[in-house]
Image (cartoon, rainbow, N blue to C red; front, side, top):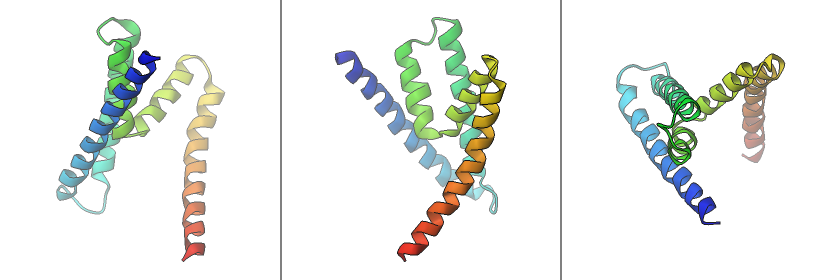
Length: 128
């Protein structure tokens, strides 16, 4: 039971740090340019790099313990960006030879996400 609480604390601490880092990037990068979401692009790419690095090391070596993976990959990357998790899950499906599931997940998330975003916007308009 204590292991579950420790895992929750690791994910929570990493998530807190990732969310703070995400906010700091958003504060710093708008000064680079306007009209393009540089902050979001940067966070998504850095998150993908980090989750790929940490996950691969946790699978292929003993350099990243399960606890460190929870802290960094699940916690920090989860708080920093969910895009990195999305890309990792697609890559895992492809690595496992699940091309159909990877394609459904990739395109279903994009198309479904846009649909749900606009649906949410329309529902919000009904409340105002």
